[in-house]
Amino acid sequence: MESFSTETLLQGKRAQAWNEIYSTSLSATDFIPQHVDFTAGLKLGGLGQIGLARLVTGPCTIRRTDDHISGGTPRLYSFLIQLSGTGQFQQGENEALLRRGDFTMCDNAVPHFFNLGDDAEMLLVRVPSGLIGDYLPYPELLCGRRLPAREGLTPTAAIMACSLWQRLERGFSSAHGDSVAHQLLEIISTSYSLAFGPEISGPFDDAVLHDQAIGFIEDNIRDAQLNARLVAQAIAVAPGELLAMFSRRGDSARAYIMRRRLELASRQLRSPRWRGSTVAEIAYGLGFTSLPLFTRAYRKRFGLSPGDYRKAQFN
Image (tube, rainbow, N blue to C red):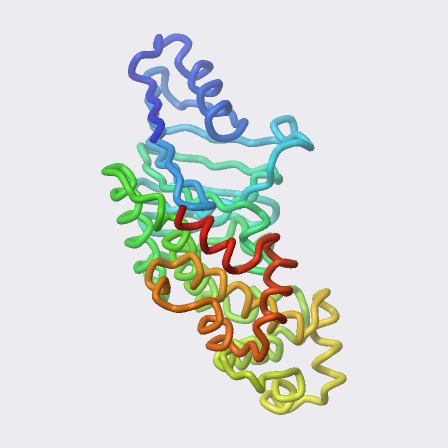
């Protein structure tokens, strides 16, 4: 775990030095202090494919502009949890007043501003763009929006994130990191789903209907008979209407079912809790009717056979 602080920096040049430290360690950003005796601290850790960061700062404005964003910067989405103090976060057309326990999302490829009127502490859960879509298909719709601290499962998500951070500070087994990271993302994304409902399904008029289709698929994902026709019957639409609904989102019901089964298989293959199950047992338990079909699909999606993927996770 890396740790940085303003304690050893000269007060007259503290803000400039801190901007360089933060920009090098996390992302290019300007801290504009409200007082000359500005203080800040940053700790960085990792959990599987995601990064975690704990930021403590005095009153300031944190600003990321177009000048900070380059074409070569890896795109990341951050769940920002306000642990203490208050802050006004703005990204795009969305603006959120954050209090203790509130969440918001931030896209590092888009300018944003964060005004902190007093001492504040934040925890950031940083997720690569290639991973966030497995949990929230349209994260750009949620950036800058407030997920209230007392909404649905939000308190549970905050407690889990903070608990995992504390474990990281004490040392955490890397063998379990990826599995735990996905569980954290699952509970955070579920919190957003409960709070924003069909909105997270995208800017479409049929968002409620699409949400019903996704819900039916998720509830029946392990059923080997699950297909687009059954989904259409379950939500009382014609098969052609279901096809059009998914096509508008650049997807298909069949592709979604396959993708979700492969994602669940991947989680089980890397989870210590499933080490006693064979690859075949995991595949058949998720609705696959052919082990060769599962292996080919898995290799196409993840670049490794299921067996090789499992070995890589535990070696």
